[in-house]
Amino acid sequence: MIPPRESAAYRDAQAFLNRVGKPVAKTTSEDFAEVDIAEHAANSCSSATLQAQTQALGETGEWPVLSHPVITQAQALEVPDPQLDDARALFREMRQIAHQNYWSWHTLSNEAVFYQQALLMESFSDYCQEEASEFSHYYPSYSHMDTAQLHTYFAWRTKVREGRIYETSVSYAFLYIYELLHNIGVSSPQEGLERLVEFWAEFRVFKPVIDKYVVSWLKDYHVFYSLEKSFSEFATENLMQEFYPTVFCYTSDRNNSFELFSSISAYPIEKSKFYTEETAPLIKECFFFVLTQLREAFQKKRRCFEDQVFHVTKRATRWTPFSSALFYAHFYPQSERVVHISSRERYAYSHGRWSVRSVLSSKPGSKLVGYVFREVEAFLRRVKQYKPKLTANLDSCKTVDQSVFEQLGISVPHVVKEACAEFYRLHTHKKVTVKRENLEQIRREAYDTQEKLLVAEKEATTAKRESSRLPLSTTISPKRHCEESNDEAIEIEEQGLPCKQTATCNDKTASQPFSLQSNEVEALALILQGGDVKGFAREQGIMLEVLIDTLNEKVMESIGDTVMELDGEEVFVFEDYREELCALIQKEDC
Image (tube, rainbow, N blue to C red):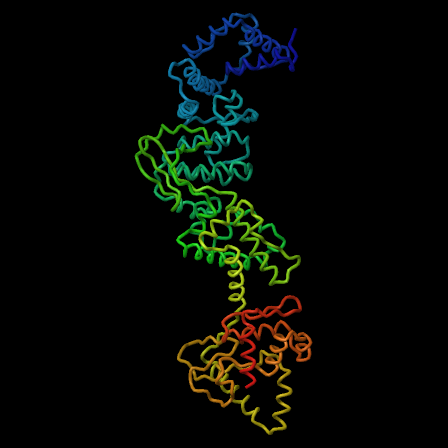
């Protein structure tokens, strides 16, 4: 009776066929059934017979001929193929390495067996046209594959070595990477690195799951092998800094700080609705400014801000290269040396052992960086009047130990908020660059303006009444009366600055550090008294935002800071500067 295909007998027969590694051609359904029965009969031998077969295989490398009439008929159905015969003979030799190790008193590790098998198959090329066979296994090796899977793998590897990388089972890809880590099929560690990067760049499109493994193995590769360039140079040349925040965050600059820190942030700012193509440059600039201020604050206390973000091991610990791969480390001779990956991460090989002082990502650090990003976005939303508003609170990050900062005398929220305000002040600080050839024209316009003001009293009164309704931007800065400079270009701030030479007019504004128009003085007084400054601006034909910006700019030169801000339609004066503003108003009225 022929065993059905779903029966255990049928599966046993196929398992025996795979072990032999010499499949029989099946020309008809009857022949196929006879072969299956033959293999099942052979597989059903007593345990003593199987032991005898295994012992013979270990001694000769060949399976003994079983005296069974159906097997004899099955062998007659074989189709001769010299290429397949040579390949399968090599497969049997490869399997024999594992079998010999099984019966040896000095058992080799799985990694050592894999390395010996990889050396045997290093130059093998397979052009088998059989249908590809799927393969899935943790820590894949040749010993885990049957004959069909071996043909599939080596045929795929042959094409990959020829530069034709295409999708296949991810276990095949890991097996190929294991070979490259052992420098199988390459002439030097440098060539192995190049092949690994090239393969990863193309195959990750099909299977992104390999990223987290290859990223780690690339760094291990630079530690284990002596290469010409450092890991930092390699990662920079290949634009891979984002994959290694623990290495490059310590030295990040304006160009890459945002990308590096956002990769470890608990708050995904790039997914925020506020983060758009339009606002992204502003957010990145603001974050780098805040980061710089945090670094300076900790540096003053002889500390490093990044050390609060990452966990730096204090003692060296045992390190195993390529720990998440099937890797035989003893094949490559090592000399005693120290390898520096960064200022904090160091690997050392001494007395036959590797040790490491590493830098690790930490959950509190991720929360801390997330708070900084959130505070930056909350501030920019507020000044851009973006709805809805966002709040940030470091106290809600329970894993962040703020007592460490308090012992250093550093208030992280205070530093971040002050840095945001300072950044926006500098970002919105307007300057006008006047070329030297335009100074003469500016001087003539200033003199013409003076002549128009020196008319009859009636006309002057009318002109004054009309000029009070002009936009504040038409105010002439006293600096424009200065003598011509020898510089090629002179920067003139929109608020008034004192002239360096003798004033050419007898106006009282020539002796003041800045000049406020009468309507500006009245507006400032209304703001300090809590009056209707919005209605006043409407009467004067001036936008409220322009009025507040102009007052801030003009007062800046005297006080040195922004003194008020506009929130919606309400103006708020910073209490620290209220007395100084009152004094300035009295001085202007003198």
